[in-house]
Image (cartoon, rainbow, N blue to C red):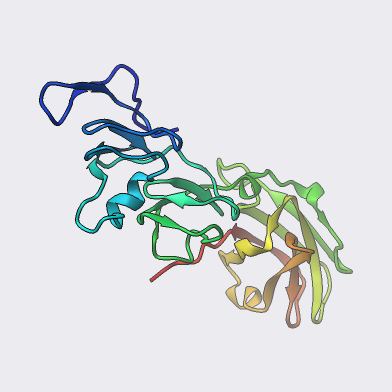
Length: 253
């Protein structure tokens, strides 16, 4: 599917006398001079007779006969976004969703398995909150507390506590050395390939948080949560901090 609709659009042919209805390009169809097709939302005009199977963006970029392309780009558009697949072959102006990002292909085509974010032919359009990041979390998702330690997910202004952004109240009732303080289980696992970055943002007692590290819990090819680890001595007290979990998308420079 594409952003532009081809229904009921009629245009004049290159001869000035013929008219053609704009239609979606079909792999097993041949086309006459002047016909206009939609491919991934972009419009292409046939130059002369075009045999079946001549893919518009590939022919426009690298014609079978140098200097004489069978298709000419008339108007650039884009397709509607679909989930990226390593087994699919993509062509110009295809829009895909990958690890929370929206990407458009700025090349005639790329081989199957050419992942967005790792190849400059894919251009990043925007970032979205992924399903895994958007899952709600509560105190029931916390477990494996250290001795003399309790923790709870607490309200953060008017925001709902989610994997992407949640607030924790940690209470330590006695002196602790290096130890795992608690573990939070994600309601939905995050693929390891997304390289989720887990960060702690303190509002006070910065020196205490400098000794804390959120360590991803890895199960197979997924990150299923994180464990908060104290890297040094923790004194008694109650601390509140925000935790951010963000799937990272490789940036192509």
